[in-house]
Image 1: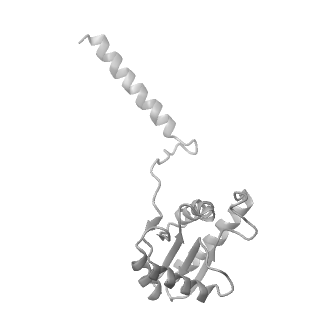
Image 2: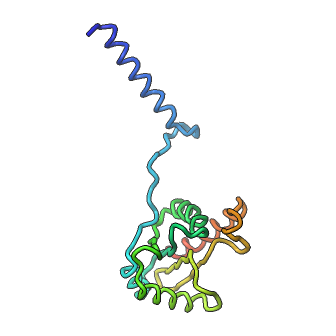
Length: 172
C-alpha cells in the first residue's frame, strides 16, 4: 500500500475517535457520559417475592405490568429515584408468570395495608429493617394516566414521595 494512503487512513480513524469522544462528553466539567444505564429494577419471580413479603424481608417490591398506563408513568420516576439513592428494587410483572395463588396473596397484603382501596397497580411495598411496612399505589393524587401524562410538578412530587419511602426503607 501507498505510504500516504496508510497515513490518511490512520488520520481518518484518529479523527473519528476524537469526534466520537467529543460526542460522549456531556458538557458539565468534561465528564464522559455513560451510555450504560445501571439496572435498579430486578425482575423477580412472584413465588420468591411472596415468601420475602411473608418474612417481611427488607426491600422495595414493585408490582405492575408493561401495558399499565400508570406503571408507564411511575417506572421512570422510580428508576431515577432508586439510582439517586443508589438502591435496588424487585420488579414483579403481575401479568407474566404470576400465579392465581400469588395474586390472592398480593391482594390480601394490599387489603391489609390499604384497607379502603380496591386493588390496583402500580403497587409498591416498602419494608424496613425492623419489618415495618409502608405502601404506595398509582402515581400522584389527581393524576389519571388514561387522560394525560404527568407534568413536571407531578413528577417532582412523586419523586419526593418515593425518595422519602426509599430512605425510610434503608435507613441505618
